[in-house]
Amino acid sequence: MKATETPLAECLLIEPKVYGDARGWFMESWNREPYAALGIGPEFVQSNLSRSARGVLRGLHYQWPNPQGKLVSVLEGEVFDVAVDIRRGSPTFGQWAGVMLSAENRCQFWVPEGFAHGFVVLSESALFSYLCTAPYDAAADANVAWNDPSIGIEWPVEDPSLSAKDAAAPLLHQIAGDRQPIFTGRD
Ligand SMILES: Cc1cn([C@H]2C[C@H](O)[C@@H](COP(=O)(O)OP(=O)(O)O[C@H]3O[C@H](C)C(=O)[C@H](O)[C@H]3O)O2)c(=O)[nH]c1=O
Image 1 (cartoon, rainbow, N blue to C red):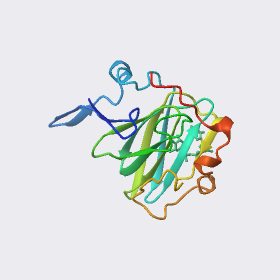
Image 2 (cartoon, rainbow, N blue to C red):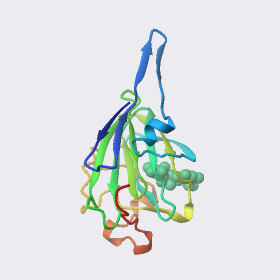
Image 3 (spheres, rainbow, N blue to C red):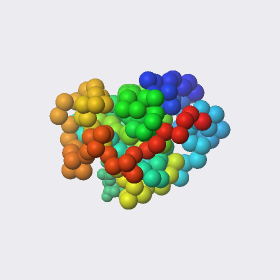
Image 4 (spheres, rainbow, N blue to C red):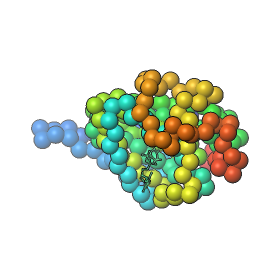
């Protein structure tokens, strides 16, 4: 497994080792110890799947309180996946990191607790899969505007399809204090 740092030091691009042979291929999509050694997880309590059509953008989402770390990947298609540091007091507050995830590159992206997350679909459709370190809590579910100019994400899609909730998301500076993750220093 190869881990690559991104502009957000805690957010890692993971390239699992793939064992190919005449039958096809095999890879470990998660293994507690080697992933925990990278600061990923260590425990996951929920696994999600979502399917989206080309041009759909889901995000930017986070939970606070009860934040979720997410290990995300794509089982079919291709997405541009983004993490944003929204932790008050963080040295990289308001900064973003984007990676290409696809069924072809089999890469994973680690989005730690306290970061907002979103993706836009670049293929005809995409089957998105992710593990979460905490269960879904509708009362803690929150979002930030995908196109917040203070974050300045360079999305590769100009006019994405959004849910009504995401179309109405607040800007980063409009998030209420009790809904904003707090930077507690790197472990
Ligand atoms: C996330 C979630 C949603 N739901 C229900 C709530 C709604 O009735 C329905 C769709 O929810 P939502 O529109 O929030 O789904 P997404 O837009 O895919 O949100 C997710 O996509 C972005 C990219 C994320 O990073 C988050 O994991 C998550 O917010 O599923 C559940 O029952 N459990 C869950 O864990």
